[in-house]
Length: 358
Ligand code: UDP
Image (cartoon, rainbow, N blue to C red; front, top):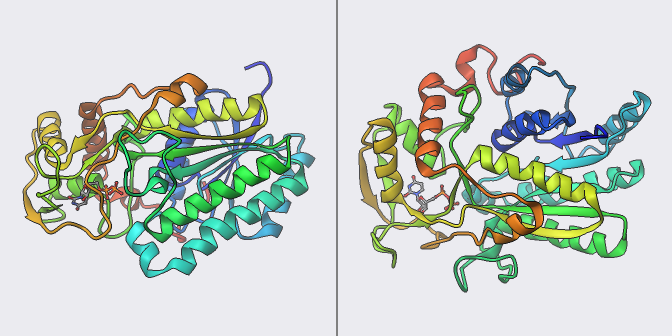
């Protein structure tokens, strides 16, 4: 890269954020992380620094805190390293929790983004990459989902992502200088191949893959397969699982696109391949030698039978495509889980508010 860019990465201490930092640093970007450490881990940031051989500032704060954001932008400008663009991960992300606590989701995800956008405007920053989700599509009218599929989320979490996309679209219309790339993630799983960083959900995981690895390691007795009577090849739910490192690299491509010129763009990040729950279990057993005990269970409320991406726009527009297969996702996710049976907590640093600064 001819010119070095400094990025603000909100939520950089989380699962996708930490993996994306590794790729951004490898691509030559400078980063400043802003995270409230409610879900993210300080230890993850220490490890990103060790893996990349680069240090970076980490500011504890909440995206709803306008004054904290103003201070951060001003400080970077004073240091002669003004923020050029923002990669915005910071958000709440559990679907069932969003049904139980909708106000927390609208507040963190929508209000938080509005506060961030206002601070960006005050600081004259007009480049954004936003973490969205394939859940904005809702019940599939046709598969694969392409980016022109209707937006019809079925839960508060999905509504928060769809609302932010709408806000960004309107902002790009109103301000011809602004550029926003919103990335509609499919199902990120796995971990960095080093086994040093990975997914560290607090409490019992909601998502299939971290649940499965916790059963595999003996911390949970068995996997419940939610629905064995869907209209899919083997009756179980089908999803587009994507290696978290591929997803992270998609952010680097999206950022380059955001830096290249103004406008609003929504892009799927998926592989284009669907895998059923039972296929994932078989792939996990083949990759790791561990057969995970499971039993059929009723369908989970709000689940759809099948979802996978049309990934062609990402390739055409961003020059990015996923390259890692299910076997790599399983092997890498299992390496992280076996080396860190208790996640980051066992490193003595914890993942909560008690940990020291990196
Ligand atoms: N799933 C399951 N057992 C679990 C968690 C998930 O059978 O303990 C199924 C779920 O019904 C869906 C797939 O695994 O078909 C992926 O679920 P996940 O929550 O990981 O992603 P999402 O449903 O949000 O795409």
